[in-house]
Image (cartoon, rainbow, N blue to C red):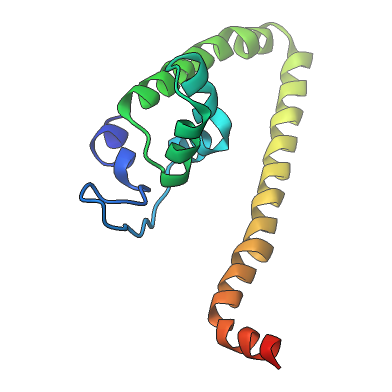
Length: 142
């Protein structure tokens, strides 16, 4: 939380405070989650913000501290409720505990495979297109 308040909230912004274009190199879990649709939901339900304003915030990665605190409140609620929804049944039932271990292992494998696919296809193909942009443009003109 301290990191986000001091540094992290501004890391992925596309524009500097003076309005010039910034070239963000870093991203945070908060910003990635907000761009995934959470910003629109928080804006609509809690902030009474228009969808257009929320989409602009997502595009520019320009979220304010109120959005961050709402996000963190839900994060805290989810973490505490996980103790009761998952932790207590795991403590009481060995079978439930085994099932949860299998579910967590399956999720880790699926998410790891998804990330690996991203690295090996989308990210590298984008990098290759940038490196060979002049050759690709020349072949299209011919």
